[in-house]
Image (tube, rainbow, N blue to C red; front, side, top):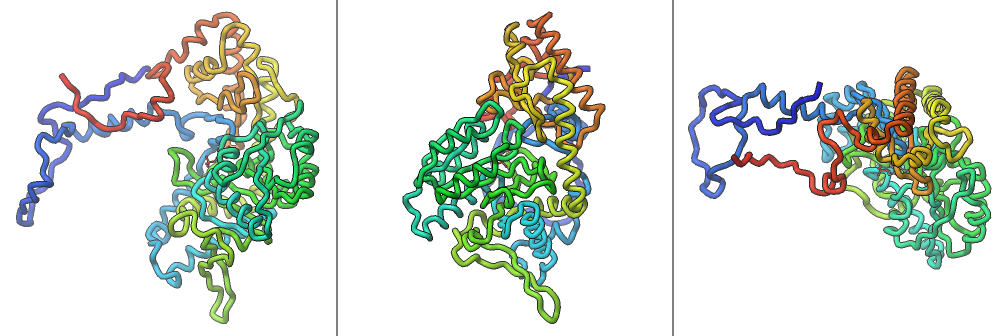
Length: 483
Ligand SMILES: Cc1ncc(COP(=O)(O)O)c(C=O)c1O
């Protein structure tokens, strides 16, 4: 059934409330606060409810649909996280409450710092950054402060692979560095020979995502770290894909010096709408003095353990107001405590298993640009379908007709007609089979009836939007319909 697209429900005289008679004296508001002809919708309560529930149903959400958005990790957010974050003792903590009265909240933050350090194989953690990209910038500013402190001010370059998420080069540039791009090789690794040619003593750092955005674990990771370290540079790990390696390998042991986490991707906190989120960073001990302030420390006394905020001695300063997005941190903490170390490892193993299973179902219908086992996500190319005039965008739109959110498309840029699929560990075999069946059907349609795919979606409420305008100039404000 298609839901009729009605946005204007207002009818003169309809009301959505009935208030009891006032029991306090009426007061006249100042004239300047009063507006005449205020165009508010006139609707009943039931109409308001139907309007907003329908609007919510017009969108895709992880709670209603499979959402295989590669690199964005749209995995299920367990409701127990919400339950804990909504607990009275957590919800009602005020940021300015004296810290002796909120020791429990500080304990949560301290233990989360410890857990993230352990998972990353690092020594210290800052929970302050509000998103992955913010963590990247914070991490690069820490690197910069450290290099400055040891007189390495001539280091002006940051190496970034051509498969990197766009936030990496943007971050390096924002931190004041010149971005040098290194190619990927035929197996989707960093091209080691080219890296060696590019590295010189001006290299401050390399920003590397491992597994990378092709869903591949770099086979030369140790050599890469050695090449950068030998030149006096530091290894920045984009830990957005930590959900593929938790409990299996620690970036700190591979040779990374700094790592950011995307709590939404790895630890099931909600994702989307630009925040609030959290992108904590973990660092090796020589970088700990430069972390943003404050961090939470613990001191054992005769009365028990006391938690406090502390400014690291050479801190880069504050990167965010107050203490970070506490409610998001609580959700991640809940998830980590619930899983335990065995559970986290099993999360990553299942993410890898699901991705490889789905890849095996799709490999005949679509071109596989890097033919090797993947980690938590994989890329396909729509180049076979392009021969029939069907582009990857068309395939993505047709998936909507089959009730699935499209995967990420045209990223990474190095794969022609790229489809980037991340099933996550939270999906079961039936969902993966249904998705694969839809993808295979679309590949058949592309060959036999290309127009059907090119004109998709057919069942959606709206057809193809100007996505840039929709994102940049969203129409969110109620305006009374003009007769
Ligand atoms: C590899 C990678 N790096 C960085 C980011 C940026 O993270 P955020 O969206 O939290 O800013 C993402 C986002 O998903 C990502 O996939």
